[in-house]
Length: 344
Image 1 (tube, rainbow, N blue to C red):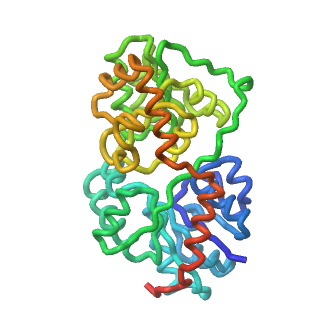
Image 2: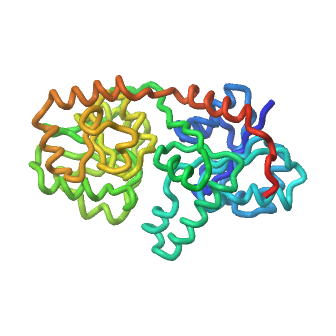
């Protein structure tokens, strides 16, 4: 049986080495939770190491020697080099490949969260991770291009999305307004969520934006009669809110975000930021990408034909795989990857 160890910078405390894959998937049915759960369906044995283990090389080395993985999959910039260090200096078990799951532009995130000096360090660290790992899987065509500039060919495996299953009768949330926009997910400043929230002040009160997910203190200033924060809601409520939307919104300057595939599943028009997302969408054909949210929202609200066309084209143009299909892509990639190829 193949063994798959996920090494992350996760500080949430929700999961640890003893958390079964099905319990993790029930709480987090996307990204790592979904990949891990579905790899077990394909015959893998899996384990999850959060930051409390991954941050300490000796502790991580003991876990590696005990679990004896074939693949160590790193996720997050702060600990991604630790398995390589452990393999060279600390582990008895060395027959594993270290594969990095590359999502965000780490340096840019640190620029925003911590400032320029820590950001400069993480820009350097990101390059080291990508160049030193035995393999790199990326969700992002933009990152794939960056890796090529560093002499690394990343394997592109996008996010997945299962067909949504939800119970409207079990959801008490009812959206109001002539035209309803919905944003789901975290609202950190680097995700540019304030841009669309601020834009709502320039629109009529019957055009409403609803946001679900964990918000930050800096977002409270945007709450109004047409910018409504629903907070973190159960998954069934989140899906029901999305089903009631006229438009689904994504604001980060990224071409990789789990909400993109999930949004497409709902056959709704998608409004996004006009930047790197052009590597995922064809602007004006299968999404409307903009840097002028008030104008774009007015356009969508006044043109139902455009809304239907954008949604139909996205469903036609962009394949969305189930998480089991995504796990199969990981399985196929891991099958030919040499174990323990490098010593550094």
